[in-house]
Length: 329
Image 1 (cartoon, rainbow, N blue to C red):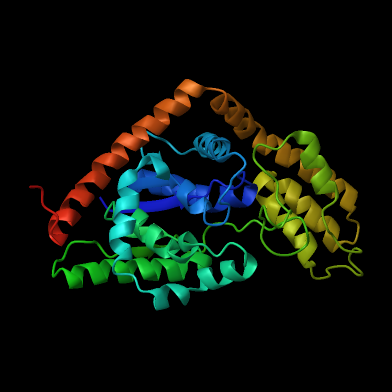
Image 2: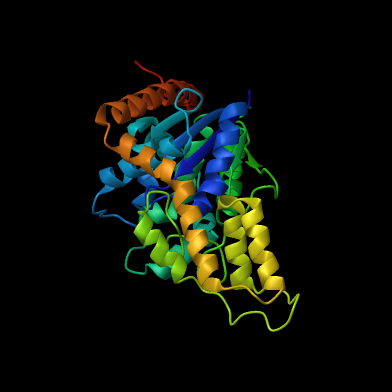
């Protein structure tokens, strides 16, 4: 069975866009692949070196992904910092990662521009840490978004370079994982673009009903169709897209028909959409609360994930040390 590795950033709550994107991908993967899903708390320090509540963020993200369907019986779910082998492999890979190539990476240049007072070494060597996360489990596939494609290419470069320098065929060269265009991309409530935390246009799975209602009622629309069968504007189409995944088909068709006939009332559309989002997220929201309050269960999941990940990672580190030439006296 092929191995898949993917990181989860502990920097924000799950929103509908995450759920129908990354989470849906993960749920498919865990049924068909040997999956390692890790909460990337080391990575978060490159941009938030003094987090207000790192442990709390990790706890919340773990609770939300478990509530959304990640299954510790099917996949290895662990916390990055629980695996010291990752830090050791990162150090070893750094010895053959060159300053020029790291400085040229798009992610480094963008982050350095955004945080000029915090251009730290961890930010520079981010692609090396990412490579260690992946190849320590000999992953053959990695799900990546557009913003991480170059870093995955760096992972492939570092793995190939190790094999070439030490004249071995050791590290698996990972390939990008892509489910194609079948997954729905959830837009934000601001009239354009995708849903996201930093954009402030998202609906979170753990969000309370009253907050959801307020957000949806403030969602951007337009001045209304000017004539029958007018093309649907982007802001209104965004609301239809969200409605497509949370409402009954006949509800969506009714509002589309109202738009085509110039009889649509955006207040009614938003009220119905808000209630359907609340009904859709309610079971997940309650499950998040239940899991987040169960210390024993969270400790059990984290411990089991650490043990399974350690078994894989320790084997890699042992073999890498032998290949390089580290031997006990």
